[in-house]
Image 1 (cartoon, rainbow, N blue to C red):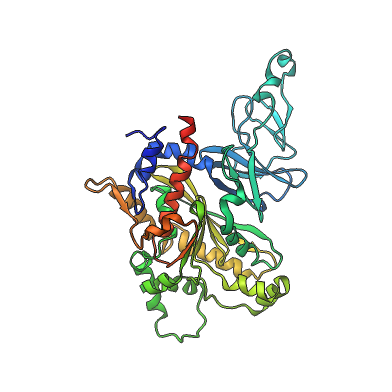
Image 2 (image 1 turned 135 degrees about the horizontal axis):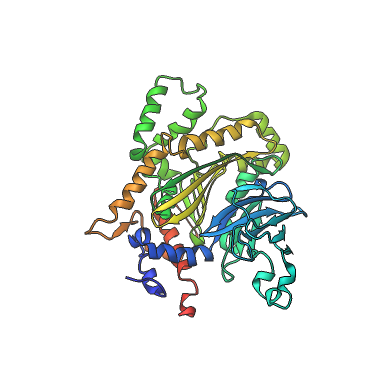
Length: 440
C-alpha cells in the first residue's frame, strides 16, 4: 500500500485504541515523517550552553537535514543549514568547535559571516554579469526561519506553516521551568559530554516506553532483584549509595506506578509522575534547599523541589527529568534505527551532588552497557522483528481506554493508563496529515 498523498490511509493507521504495525515498519512512512511530520512539529536542537562563545557551533541532523547552532558576535544564537550556497558541501564536519569570525567552505573557499551572510568568493570577477546575486546561491547560508529559545533550550520548526512555539508546547514547558529553576541562579549548563546509543528499532517504540510504567517489574526484574539482595537487611534509615538510591525504586510494584499518575496535553505532550516518582525520595540537602528558598521564596522553592516527575515528554523529540537534571533526545535515523542521546546538566549555584546524580543516572539507566538499558534495547529490537509476524497487524493500546478521552485535550489519569501513548499517536496522525488535503 502507498501512503503518499493519502491522508485517510495515514489516519487509518491510528485507531482509538490501537495502531497499525506499518507505523513502525514502513520505510515509506518514515520518509513521509522526515518530509512532513518532523517538519510540522517543533524539534529540539540543543542548549545554548553548548555554544558559549562567539564563533562556537554545534552541528547535527534535524529530520535528515544538516543544521548548525551558532553563537553570533552579538551573543545571540542562530540555527543555520550546514550547506554551502555554492555546491552544497557542509561548512563544518566536526560536531562542535569554533569557526572564528567566519565560515569557510572546504571545497571552493566561499566564506560567510556567522549569521550566514556572504562574505567573499574566489574569482569574484567571474560572476560579474551573471545571475548569482539574484538567486539563492548569492544570498549566503539559509537560516531556519522558525527558531525559539526557551530558558536556553533551542527548538526549531522546519515548515513555514504550523503552530507557534508556545501554542504547540503549552503547559508542558513547565517541565523545563522545573529543571532550570532547580538552579538558584536559574541557569543550567550541559556538562559531562553526551551518551549516544543507536537502537535498531523505530523511534516511536522508544518514545512509548518513556511513558510505560508496567514494564519495569518484568523487564528489569533481574536488576532490581540483584539490588534488593545486596541491600537486604539494612536499616530503613541507612543512607544509600547513589546507585542504590536510583535503582531500587525500579522494583516498585504496579500499585506504586499506577498511583504516581500522569497527565496528557494537546499535541502529544505528557508528564508521567504528577504525584510522585522513583526520583521523589532522593536524600535531602539542607544547605541547597536554603539557597533555593532564598532564590525563589519559600512557596516556589517547595513547589520546585517536591515536584519530581518520572518523565516529561515534549513531543516528539525530547524527554526531560527535572531531578536528576537529565534529558534524552530522540533522533530518528530510519524506520528501524534510532539514535538516543542522554545529556546531563549542571545547575549553577547548586551542589556538585546534583550533577553527580544526573551523570550517575545516565550511566546506570541509559548506557547500552548499563544494567537497565540493555533489557529495554533487547525488547525494542525484539518488537521490531516480531511485528513482521503474520496473523495480527495491530499493536494494542487498550489499557484504560475511555471514549470520553477523545474529546479532551488535557487529562489527568492513573500512571499505568496507555492514554499517554495513545495521545502521542493521535498527535502523530494530526501532524503527519496537516495541510495534506490542500496540497492534493
